[in-house]
Amino acid sequence: MSFYTIDSLTFSYNRNTSLLENISFEIDNNQHIGLTGDNGCGKTTLIKLMLGILKPQKGAILIEGQNVKDMPLSHIGRKIGYVFQNPEKQLFCPTVWEQMSFSFKYGNEGNRHIMEDRINHYLDLFELKKYKNDSPMKLSWGEKQRLALASVLSRNVKFLIMDEPTIGLDMLRKKQLQKCLQALKDEGKGYMIVSHEPDFLERYVDKLLILTSKGVEVR
Amino acid sequence: MMNLDPRTRIIIVFIVSSAAIILKEVKSLMLLLAFTLVICILSSVPLKKATMRLRKLWYVFIVLAIIQSIFTQGGDALLTLGSIRLLTTKGLEAGISIILRMSIIIYSALIIIIASPLDMVYGLAAMKMPQEIGFMVLLAIKFLPLIRDEFIDSITAVQLAGADLKKIPLGKKISLYTYILTPSVTKALRRARYISLSMECRGFRAYPTRTYYCKLKLKKFDYTIMAATIASIIAIILISW
Ligand SMILES: Nc1ncnc2c1ncn2[C@@H]1O[C@H](COP(=O)(O)OP(=O)(O)O)[C@@H](O)[C@H]1O
Ligand SMILES: [Mg+2]
Image (cartoon, rainbow over all chains, first blue to last red; front, side, top):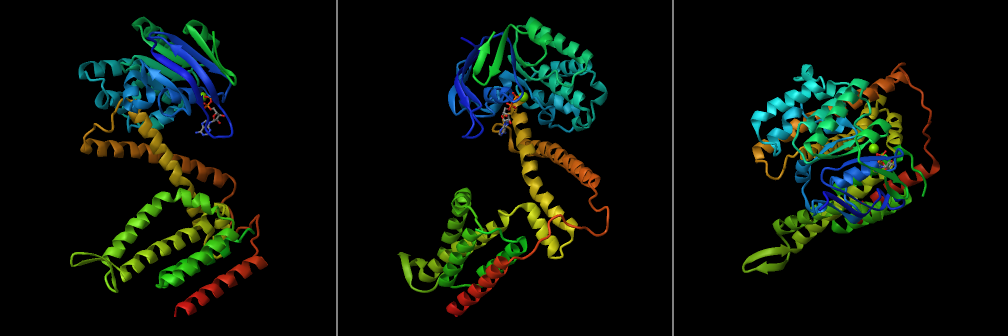
């Protein structure tokens, strides 16, 4: 059974215009998907639908055979890690450390022993340790982006969705993100990454979805 | 279907809602409501849409009216349960007047609400309200939905981070909400700082007196409608006397 099933999905923000029309595709366990398309073609919208933040007007989205509309957001969040396109929308804790440990405290991540190790590992990797006790709101855009990535990567989820995570990252951090993607592949985890960068799309993706006004094209 | 001057709107709403509070008789409240609806139509308030959007509010009013009718005694009994008089004519009147009064206030407020906020600031300034205060009101109106949106975004992020809001015990939930509210307000405040910066960049308060791009001028229609309002209110009061 495929991990994600998107079945003849139709969605628009208002009645007069159609944004996504009759879109279908599948994602298998441990598949690495790239999603591209012009600005404003609805990539972020598609992702929000896949996470159950928005509800489709027609069609269905299934995660491991279960319809997203019947699942509470928190259950979806425990299976799927999501890096928002806008990191400011993702960061809500008073300090960087609390942001990193939130899922361990309130989610199902459980195991307190590995918590500190994992968090420290990712804070080191993205060089955020010195901001441990600072407010995420004080960080620069790129640093917020790194924190959003680190907080999702440190969690133990089956599948990751990253919405344009490379925007705002410098060369070094892009390399580190690539390393993380490689690590995810090695761990046998699937992900979907929205990106316009050929480098990422060629080397870290097995299947490329191109979203156009006509539908999705699989390559 | 004319565009009313913001000052006319403020004056009409002030008169009508004061009358709604002063008047007691069901009959005169009905007349006042009819008058308010006419003004709403004249100033192109989308009545149908507004009524639909305020649906939830009407339920509250109906509950209020029922409570009011049960607890106001006097007059003839309409409905009795054993020896208890559940509903009396006086009670029914009290219930109906509460609904009428609320409707009048809500519909008259719509006359102000559908005006563009900037126009209202100009209107307030023309009525000798300091410009700064007018602008503060405008910004406050703009900011409420922003803070709400920030909060909703944070709640989404919290849930996607795996927290099940339904299963968290109440005490922890309250601390979680305060926890989230702080950054939401911080984000909104930071936006406010940018707005004030950009306003200052455009010379807001740079000079003690201010000129206006739009000069407000009361038109004949404004005078007519104000006079009509005052006349109608007096007539309604006289009828009910
Ligand atoms: N909340 C919203 N309400 C109405 N329209 C929206 C909303 N969010 C996005 N849109 C519109 O939907 C289209 C697709 O947006 P989006 O999915 O963010 O595109 P992208 O592919 O760049 O991520 C855009 O034209 C955008 O203006
Ligand atoms: Mg996007």
